[in-house]
Amino acid sequence: MFRIARWKPMIASSITLSALALGAALAMPLPADARTITAVMHSDLRIIDPGFTTAYITRDHGYMVFDTLLATDANFKIQPQMADWKVSDDKLTYTFTLRDGLKWHDGAPVTAEDCVASLKRWGRNDGMGQKLMDFTASIEATDAKTITLKLKEPYGLVLESIGKPSSYVPFMMPKRLAETPPGQQIKEQIGSGPFKFVPAEFQPGVKAVYEKNRDYVPRKEPPSWTSGGKVVKVDRVEWITMPDAQTAVNALQSGDIDFMEIPPFDLLPTLSANKDLKVETLNKFGYQTVGRMNFLYPPFDNIKVRRAALMAMNQKDVLDALVGDPNYYQICGAIFVCGTPLATDVGSDSLVKGNGMAEAKKLLAESGYDGTHRRDHGAHRCRDIEGAADCRGAVVARRRLQGRCAGRRLADGGCPPRQPEAAKGRRLEHVLHQLRQRRSGEPDRQLPHQRQRQERRLVRLARRSQDGSAARCVLARFVTGGAKEDRRRDPKGSLRPGDLYSARAIPRGQCLAKVAVRRARRPGDADLLEY
Image 1: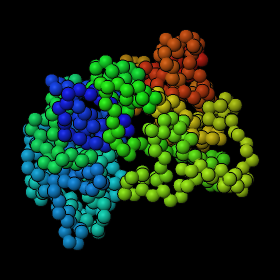
Image 2: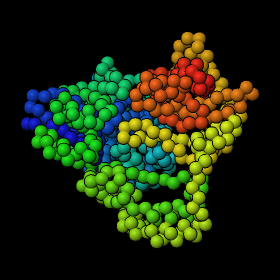
Image 3: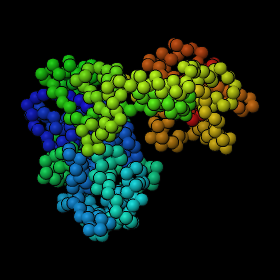
Image 4: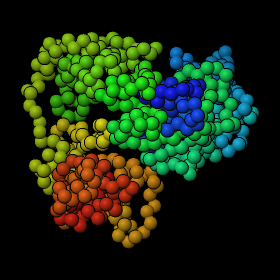
């Protein structure tokens, strides 16, 4: 993972979160008279509740505003952060004691009750938290600074769970926020971390602003990954969204921004040659790329075909296609990441050496696969069986590709079975209710995050025949030039039954149901939105 900052006379910051984006940004050299860091992160920030999504950008936001009881250092050891701990001889009781000087951003002291409520909220959402709660008999505040966790039986990952460094991170927050009902986001950004969030300047997807928390008392240990002292030496940090990487690079070179996270690999040689910029790899573990075959449909429902595909793979070929320059990738056969305590490359010879083709051919012959390439699947099959009711389930997914959202079919062999009539009826009735609201001018009662999630996912539009049966499947199309280009390409209507598209074509900020009503009046468009 590469990050770039401007190289000037420095005020070194010691709030190094190393594996986390902003901690790395603040560790960069700063102009001597500068008190503000302007950063372009790897993604735009929209959801600001770190207990509501596993998105890394929201996690990084969480580390700016909130703090944790325990933390993980660069050697994967658990260290105290907000609290120290003791473990009973029978390994059933863990006692955490809050350190002095902890305050929430509103000035109230951090209490054990706040932390108990925070742990319970995290334990409902996070996988490791849920497992920990399965072993937990009780967790309570025995006094203002003491948290007592009692187990039903010994469990070896108590500290590792509470000190986990990534999503969902067990961030501490005031009790009133931690008791937010499940499924809802917290209403305030009040933490005890090194920065205060500035809600008045927050523009979702555009800009997020943080100011130094002058009441924050850092630990005295040197920073190490998510542990140690977070000493802030700037007054303000601004995250600016620039979706186009070239625009961000130009802004960095011109001095309009100070920091860029994860620049394009093909631009790194040019940026490295600029003496005003400093390029660093702050997370030596980088990112993994993972692929999974769809075993629900032929031919990959046959285990021998799946094994043959794995044996035929050469990791270097994949990395050459994804990254290109060998200086920027590492061949690694460890599923739990090379260089970590759990790393093992057992069974990865063919993947890292590319010597498994002979075995792949043998497995493929044993599988009985005849080499047939099935083309009549997904949306294309919908066209072939126009009017068929089971075409309602064209399976799609979305992925990030060069900053754009592109639809990709996962199914390889037609549409999945129809959903039960009762579920279908409930879904259609909800959509029709939304359509009626739009036509009548009633206020939109959807929460903003629900609209955003609805707009960004792949959606399905279905033309309804007179008897009420689904005739064809449709998805909204991604058009780079927006609505004007959309109409130029398809003056008679762009939401064509049977085609798979990406939902990014729909104007941001508008509800899908509203868009469906407007577009349905054009010939060839669908007249009912279904999701």
